[in-house]
Length: 265
Image 1 (cartoon, rainbow, N blue to C red):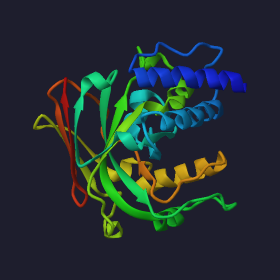
Image 2 (image 1 turned 135 degrees about the horizontal axis):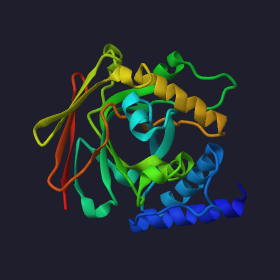
Image 3 (image 1 turned 30 degrees about the horizontal axis):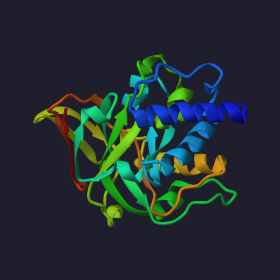
């Protein structure tokens, strides 16, 4: 994909996100045709967004790491996007629907890295990744369908736009997470005091840290890397809930605590 076409795609996606408008589609002349082009657009887009009002590039989300989301989106491989500092919340968030095109809520777990993970020539293993984690926390990913109909868009276009990410709510960091069996932890989600869904850590690629291992190696392949201090949300264990005014959603996992979102507007 030519650099001029990448720049044009970046301009369209940046303006669309900052204006909070629904994108129909990218014109064929600037639409990424493969995932390599999609991630190049995403990286350039995030450079620009970080210099605007979204703040620093503070971490990553990994999408489509669980069967429920792979079936829902009909995408059967992990995909990453980036998270910006201005869109991060602690423990709970009160959100106005007017600030989103179509707000969605996904229930996840996240990690904070302790060390950089540069390309050392060999792929990172599960054990390497586990040693690089500072803390584990419960999370809610905020997603936004910034499109007239996301179901009509191709995967590279969604990827170029950070694969729906619009922010994250992070729970209390658990530093002694090694005492927890992350794959066995059960997710319990309520919406307006009624059970919305249940999940389990093992739904995330067999073990949540398999998703983090995938991301570390994927970034190295692309000439990038995870850095100490980065937050990484590992994928939703329950199907996306598209928010309505007055919704209150709680996400709880034994050992990790609770996080919540309340929606107004």
